Image (cartoon, rainbow, N blue to C red; front, side, top):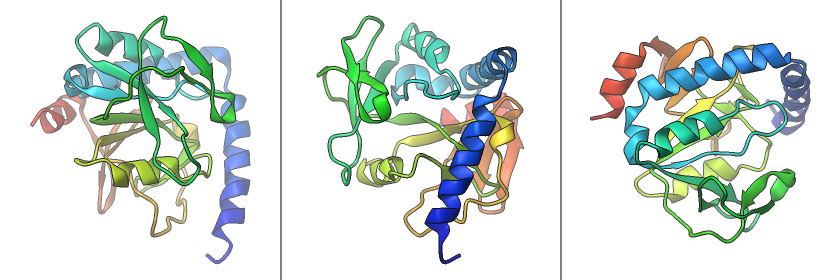
Length: 207
């Protein structure tokens, strides 16, 4: 596809309208289901430094999961855009941490300590059958996943209504390691998304 950027812009707009039309009850049920799957399938998050994104425009709300893993020993972090062409900077977050408005008016920690994340729970506007994510178009998470060594575990989260046949991935796009929706946990494999049980996922990610 030659004009993939224009195509993605259109898809992004359509999917965000679809997401923002979700009823409050559906959003709550789906978010609760995703949280339960993340709690059961990724116990390794409880002993890790985990990057999240503050919920924005109808995204999955990760705050219950953040509280759950923090109470069990995890260090939490939220991303800050330092420079549009650079990887994200992750700053430590805790309930009551000072906050300020960042890029896209999304709240970010106000000058708290910088940490290196070992896992990322990444919201997705859309996702495809090969585990590629459609985001807001800035390429921040792609740059971040390449920059951090060892590469963090990348868990994409979205609702099933945002599934696409393809995102027309480009050479710079990085697929997720796992995708979690209200329908289940998907391992990202070369052949496509594979539905696995929370128990299988926990065994894999605790190795």
